[in-house]
Length: 240
Image 1 (cartoon, rainbow, N blue to C red):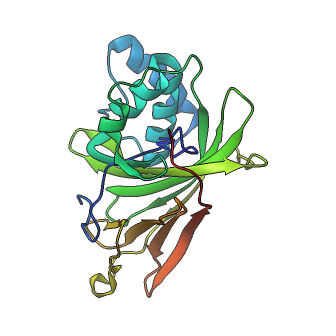
Image 2 (cartoon, one colour):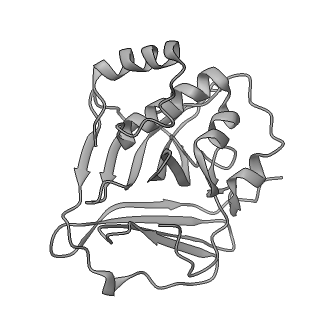
């Protein structure tokens, strides 16, 4: 998904999450998947609805769609109805993207790491993005495996002075089973949080009045939660 990604103020996605409201609650990428994707296109199938693909596969298919059908068209296609993105304040992705035309050249992105809940139904991908104007950055996207396939529910990210290196094979870490439901995140104004149904993967976000943002992702290691992502985005003026 990408990005699903919140690529700087102009490239993000996520739905307006009310403070304290929890968001609705694998096979991994191989070179052969590229050939399978081509066969799917020829046969009229879509990676969007294939039940056997992993979060990494979904991210790559999302990125491929952005190049072929258009950036914002792909963002809409791969998101849930309540998906949230930051521009830089949190907005419902579908409402914000509703009348936006696709740019002539889509942002490009690739996953670097994927953190997957023990139940295999939730994941958080993070990776690198590149824009046509030469700017670079990173993204963090929360994915949910629904009955119809993977969809992104939260997208965040920011620009960087130098691109993150992309390994030949993304790193995948799967949570241990048996998360601790007693230690959920608290809530505060202009914040949101969510977790996998089995409580082995959880995330929270907060946007400050100056548009600064923090996105934290934690993964259950069998005894406690490890903070695997802690993105801090400096404050900046709101988009016009």
